[in-house]
Image (cartoon, rainbow, N blue to C red; front, side, top):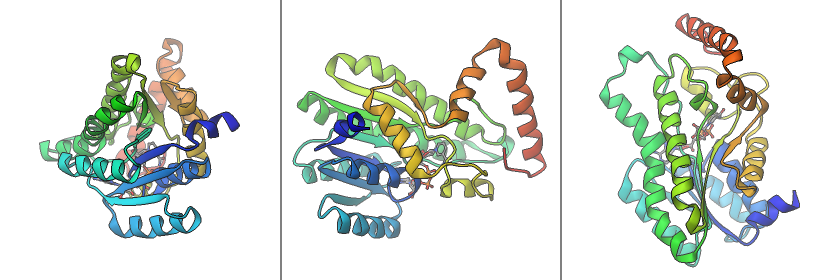
Length: 272
Ligand SMILES: NC(=O)c1ccc[n+]([C@@H]2O[C@H](COP(=O)([O-])OP(=O)(O)OC[C@H]3O[C@@H](n4cnc5c(N)ncnc54)[C@H](O)[C@@H]3O)[C@@H](O)[C@H]2O)c1
């Protein structure tokens, strides 16, 4: 644990989608590991104001909230500029965490819907990366973490946009890992695992039984990131899912499971 904490001690970090769920837990945990300052970016101003006030009462003046819609490149640029100012010119970490589940029937989703899904789950990260790279290059280091989902490896029916956007984000992350490796700018993809957050309201339901807490997920992600893993898997289900999906011997089981998910969802049973 000490090694993990050391990776964040005295560092400066930006987390998007930080006013709730996994992003908020990442923020709190990074602060508890001794980070110097942290910037919470989120579109939900009310949650942001409340959480930043709470964090600053425990970690005086170390947190800044910036209202930012990550689907708007100008807003993301402005947010990174504000973050750099608050962090006295340094940004060691960017967690592109803002995202949503985008459920529904493929045939009822038009190009406008696909555009919105990619704007949030994919381009939001592209804009963040573009804005922060010059700062990381100038300081000679940095670590960018893109929060994907197990669904990138286990695509599910009635979540085609979620599956596609998160798979695309994973491809982006891993290609950039090699593009920037020699500049000491690190890239990691992280799945949170199944986590009890507001995201589960997307299918009109609750988080599945046995979902872990955002804090557990954040600790797993931060530990993997501190080891510079290329892909952090947030829980055992994601880890075994990734193994089995690409194992030809397990293809039959995976196909049966995913077909069953599709049939249940068609009947309105959202739980997987
Ligand atoms: N909870 C899970 O089980 C789970 C599983 C796999 C992946 N994820 C991923 O984890 C990340 C965090 O999700 P969560 O579960 O904490 O959900 P959440 O709904 O609790 O948090 C998402 C946050 O993103 C913010 N946000 C939404 N649109 C935004 C925008 N345009 N600009 C800026 N902020 C915006 C929301 O206001 C919210 O605070 C997402 O990328 C999600 O896809 C979650």
